[in-house]
Length: 137
Image (cartoon, rainbow, N blue to C red; front, top):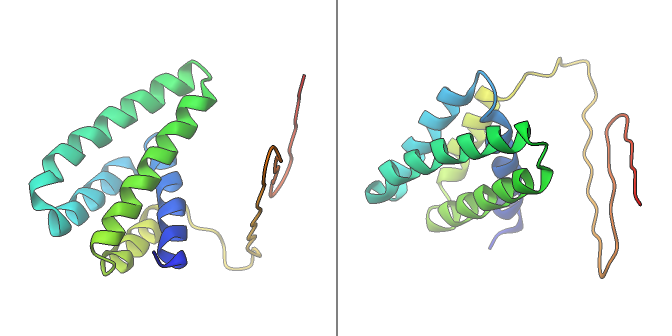
């Protein structure tokens, strides 16, 4: 798979799960279901229901401070979006436009931050664009 498509799926999966608990959720959900209707029309209604179920799971995970479940939900949607993009790479432009439309806008005079890290073996990576507090036992 094209590394750019894989990266887009990773970013989109994370963004989609984050937006599930925001005011932009309905617009995001409608855009995602429209993409599935284009590529897999027979699965669109099921994906719509799965998005709503994931949203309920996310809200419950956040209420319980269950970061692991939230991470699993992100990974699940990253995989689903990667498979959707693999089935029809032309959907990538539609996905990028949706993310631009629903993501919070950053003022033009604020510099962007791009971070990339790789951990191998039992290595750990900690990245932050601002404050970071790590407590390990």
